[in-house]
Structures are given as structure tokens and as C-alpha cells.
Image (cartoon, rainbow, N blue to C red; front, side, top):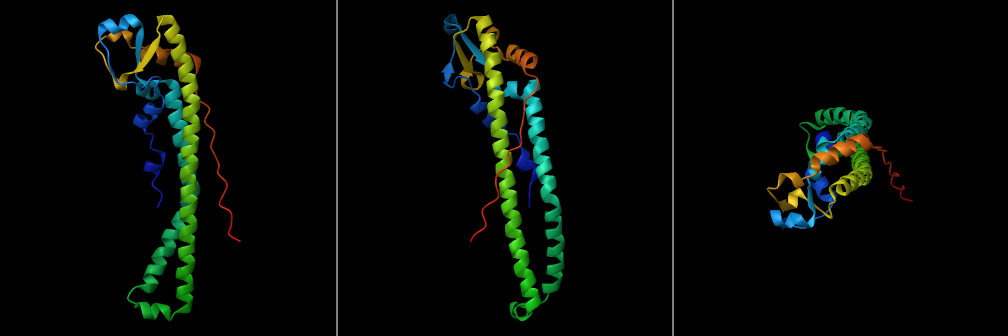
Length: 202
């Protein structure tokens, strides 16, 4: 059955990797910062900014709505399974096969399970597409905030903190980017993606 926690889990590590402004593994020394290198922790921007929190909340709400849409059918399937289990309990395969009505019910139940599995899979793909679209919008807003901070700092290169080792605190711009993003774009538009159902076989 549908696992809500797995369905709506927000994968910050993978998301941060997608939003890295520059991805080169580097060990940065103080002398290198004469070249105007700045450091950004994208995972923190996602986790701590108003836009990131708003985006995650909306994606989770959409996931919960999808789960709510699937729940009645799943509950009905569980109830039907309990009933069928009671009917086949103690019977051999041959005895079940001789009960035409029971066989028909079991076959119908199997078809219902397949239909529900297809719906669940489609909802999972819809949520993934919804999240990807939201991340793209977030990235655009974050990039704009990063650019403003870079210009203020006269920076030329932005490196991701996850791929860089540095002990020079004053070159990290994460807090400034979060503040700028909170000011410019405190919310993110998240639209639910709806995929068409599979075409019925002719």
C-alpha cells in the first residue's frame, strides 16, 4: 500500500546537489580568496529560507492530498481482502477452484489491486514532477538572490560549500543569500502536476 512518508519525503541532499551554483571539488586556501571566490551552502538555503520552507510545505500538502484521494479505495481493498481471506481459509486450491463465485470474486479483486497500483504509481510520478517544477522555480529565485549578493561582494566565483573545504568564514554568503531571498521571494508557487491516465487497451 501507499507509504505517505516515502511518498512526500523531501530529499535535501539530492536537491542541494541539483541547486549547486558551481560544482568543482576544491580545497580553498586564504590566498585563493584574493581571486574573489565566495562559498554558498545550498542545503541551508533550501532548509532555512522562507521560500524553501514554503516550497517544502506545499509539496507535502499536495502529497497529503494525493494520499487522501487514494485512501478510500485502499481502505475498501483492505476490507475486501479480509472478507476473501475468511472465505478461502481452510480450503484447498481444488476446493476454491470448484467455487465459481469465489473464483470470480478473487479475479475481480486482483484486477482492483492492479488498478489501484497503477493509480498509486501515477500519483507518485505526479508528485515527483510537481516537486521538480517547484525546485526549478526555487532555483531561479535563489539564483537571483545569489547574483545580488555576488555583486555586493564583488565576487567572481561561487563554490558550493558541500564540495569545498575552507576555514575562511567571511567568504561564506549563505546567510546573506537567505536574507536576500526572504526579502525578494518569501514564497514559491507550487502547482500540482496531473498526468493523464493510461489509455485503455483496445
